Amino acid sequence: MSLQQFMNEALSPWMKQDGPDSDIVLSSRIRLARNFSSSPFPLIASDETLEKVLDFFKEEYKGQSFRDYKGFEIVQMNDLEPVEKRVLVEKHLISPHLAEKPEHSAALISENEQVSIMINEEDHIRLQLYFPGFQLDKALEQASQLDDWLEEKINYAFDEKRGYLTACPTNVGTGMRASVMMHLPALSMTQQINRMTPAINQLGLVVRGIYGEGSEALGNIYQISNQITLGKSEQDIVEDLHSVVKQLIDQERRAREALISRSGVQLEDRIFRSYGVLKHSRIIESKEAAKCLSDLRLGIDLKLIDDIPRTILNELMILTQPGFLQQYAKASLNPDERDVRRASLIRERLQLENEE
Amino acid sequence: MECQECHQRKATVHLTQVINGQKTEVHVCEHCAKDKGYMSYGEENFSLSNLLSGLFHSESPSTFKGKQAHTQQQTPQLQCPTCGMTYQEFARIGKFGCGNCYETFDERLNPVLRRVHSGNTTHDGKIPKREGGHLHLKRELDEHKSNLRQLIEQEEFEQAAKVRDKIRTLESRIHEGEDGEQ
Ligand SMILES: [Zn+2]
Ligand SMILES: [Zn+2]
Image (cartoon, rainbow over the protein chains, first blue to last red):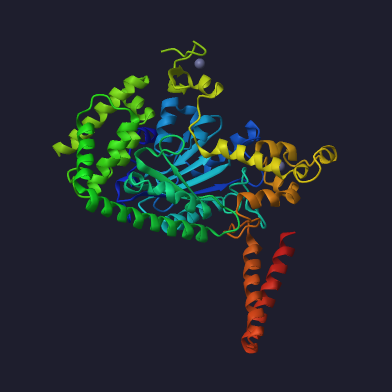
């Protein structure tokens, strides 16, 4: 059963592939917000309306395929345990907002987990498509085709002047949020990323940590996305994001080289100490785990460590979130129990690599 | 473990709260987590709508004209005929009720959109294939028209004549399309 697949593996099938610039860019995502023209938006829609929208998706798209995206499965929020919803959030297959409003909401997820169409989120439709590495253009092209595929059967709320109409004025126009997930350890270690953020904001782009709260970015993983959705074409938005990400990639590579030449031994020491902690600790908090995983991944990218696949960072970041830990433990865990469970899970995972 | 709020359901949400440097553990059920506001995943939604309603308030005329004078007469009830949402409600929650709200609140939207979208107020991106029908033609028409202007300025009249013919064909197609829709 497909829900089991979504729940069991931390890494979605597409995450196991390398994409362009995979040493720095973990993934590229396009998200499109769409609404039915004839129905009130989910926030104020009646139960009947929401049910109608959901039924429409069940009837028209359950089990369907579109090109590479096969076997769409409907996952209804109502049918899920809280911990299962958490797991889907941790895998980025659904948004926290969808998990919080279980009535009449669902996600239509392709077998390879590259496409997830959230139904009755803030908008009737939130289509998101992921690609590994730095592939924004391809993601945009295919997201747009998926959008056309849906439009064959749906009359979208669209206005000549304002574009695709969305519940929130921050999404109107293209309804598009393009984003790139990046691992920026060297720019973080040297504090450069903090200095660059204001300039990036000025360009209408947002930089934020994916894990952790406020300004801290656990695991040195950042998301860069567009803020503006109105008055620019999808291509222009993606192009602007693309050029900033390209620069960040160059800067990160340069910062890594500078670190190696200035303080190679210290860097190596830091990386192998983190590796040691991950391999041997019995209790580890998520913050420390994230830091060590980021170091380990940097070590892999710098070819200091060669017996572990790159995807370990992504996999273990997801796997050691509270939802997944509890899913694996088949029990609810308090924070202390989680830290123990997290340490043993990481140890076992690394052990597995060393045996192969 | 039972939920420490309702003592009825199983605690499935476990959090560590830090208040004034004091760490406390919280074990609650999902229902209470939502109810008591423990459950915030730190996503953009919440803060954005706060930010937005802030925008609306600073947009109100009372901030730059006399403070008292405008508060009374500045409340004509703009209400969306389709979903029933009033402008006041929209300004409070920062979200529209339906697509038609955009039309209803149209005259007041530009300042809001300008702030959120770096000065932009009109769409310049994708047009849906079916829904957008004659809009595709209209956009093509606009491109031809500006092309025509350029050609005339450059005194390339032969080219200009060709473009003008294209414009005529397009215009009649748009005309037919609009008649056909009714
Ligand atoms: Zn409770
Ligand atoms: Zn409305």
